Amino acid sequence: MPALPPGLMTVLLLIGSNIFMTFAWYGHLKVKHEKLWIIILVSWGIAFFEYCLMVPANRIGYGVFSAAQLKTIQEV
Image (cartoon, rainbow, N blue to C red; front, side):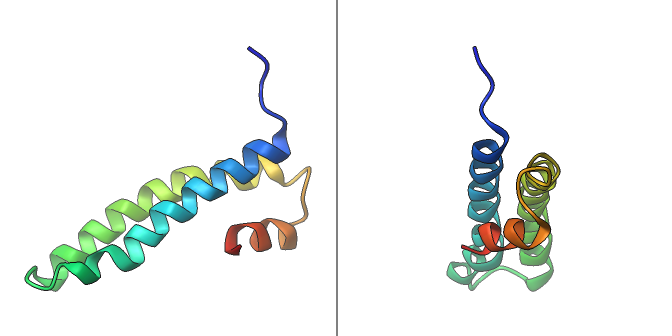
């Protein structure tokens, strides 16, 4: 099975990363009854998986994209 091109792999990993980060940032807003410290721990736990996708995406993509382009892709 052929590997995905680095540019495509980077974009896919950053999309996955953003999905995790969106849940970490905003998912807790639906849970009003939980203690704040639990919400913080859960958000950090979700953010861990975001970093597990973002860091490899940036390392793979840095040869294909500049740092500014990687940040733009991540934000979009």
